[in-house]
Length: 584
Ligand SMILES: Nc1ncnc2c1ncn2[C@@H]1O[C@H](COP(=O)(O)OP(=O)(O)OP(=O)(O)O)[C@@H](O)[C@H]1O
Ligand SMILES: [Mg+2]
Image (cartoon, rainbow, N blue to C red; front, side, top):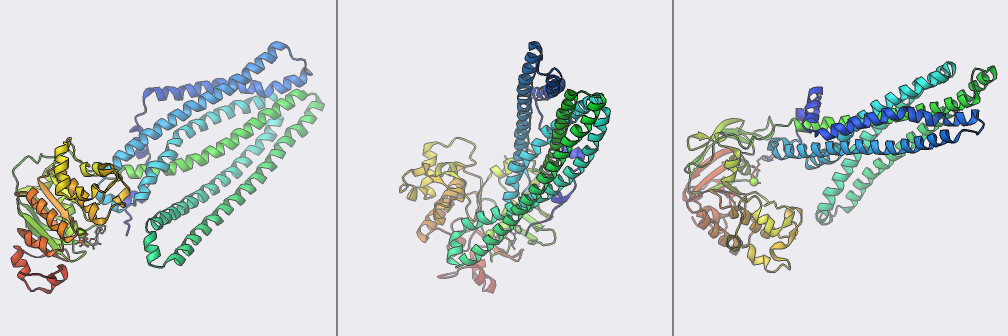
């Protein structure tokens, strides 16, 4: 279940926007490019006007323009083309630089964000924040600049329309507000459709990714028919949305054509009258028409820019909301270079969701330099306890101590560095087996060390049979290895950094009996006189522990030596353990 936290829905203030944009820290040269863009485009307004009025001069001069004037026109035309292209490249460069800065900042934020915030968002939403949303958001700057420039050019062109004929200009200007209202309504409608389309696209992409990853489950559950139907429903909805967009576009094109016809008819019909009265020349009517067409084009651009600004604004708001997520300060606090001590939970209450406590007042001690087994039925809260030890979450009530110190007094970086963790499910990264085994190890691993770990973790047992050995590429999640092989790699990774403390969450559950006892033997050798916590349902593992803590429904049901716990005839223990062959 996803939480609906404030950061997703709250309004974003202008100050927040500004700080996100400011944090991009655009280097001075990019501001320079923006200024250059303005200067070049303002300088081009008279050149553009000259080009527009050229046809008028041709008509009035009845085709006999002096060569110098013709040459000027050709130069003006070429200059206009080059400068338009160059200045739009400038703006493109600035926009991409903003995109780069925004992406980098956002990625840094996501990496440092507190774990609890990820529970409220799914991976795909975060991916689209970094990719699509940054793309759109970075266009805000260039679009606003283009919008300002287009307004400035429009003002220049409208002034020259008035200079040519006040009367014709008034007629034409009636069209402008009308076209703006129609254009705005169209842009708004298209924006709403685009939002809906984006949501549909995202839903069908998530569906397709999930189902293609779990095709085996679909086949073995005989769910092909239901899945085909489900896919069809999603595609149908998309198809209808595309048709709607197509109809809207066609309607808008029809409206635009009508406006075009009117905007051609007005200057020529009314202009003819003015020519007859001797108030204008034929050339001036043509010049007026050419300028008014440019103004029309500017209006269309303004409407498009307004649409883009709205879209970019939405994307920037999502980026900004992600930017306000609370982050972990990994550096603050003491170093862990102190003697080993017990880890003590004192009445710890914790829940992933506010009104749903998972740990309901846990008080227990993980003794130093001993192997502690954490046992309990599925969902009782064992992994959650380890996540609190790793400080991925903070208790809502109560405290966790290391010796007599609150664990929050230690810097997160040095705390986590002291722990080797094998999480439940043994997640692996895309990359080679070697990269996965050394992942997170800051120092350089020697070949000898690598070989020892590979042997102890039994990775070498199966790597010898792979064509590329340790350089075999693993797919995301290590899906091209068996469950047991994945666990061996994850155990190797935990061993590689030779941590002071080890947390193993069902780390050997997929290993065959022989390998499990061999890996456990290697681990107990490695962890001799080091604090270790093992979550397991296997009797052998519990028997080898020094201390056992039994969890039941988020509370400590009992704690003591393996003998004390296993001797208990409690029904709960029957549920927790696979007691086959148990001899206590
Ligand atoms: N990220 C999460 N968001 C919300 N609830 C969660 C999350 N992770 C675990 N829970 C809930 O917390 C409870 C305890 O989960 P936990 O993973 O600690 O159980 P466990 O004892 O490790 O079980 P298992 O033996 O199945 O691994 C469960 O009810 C689970 O649904
Ligand atoms: Mg678990």
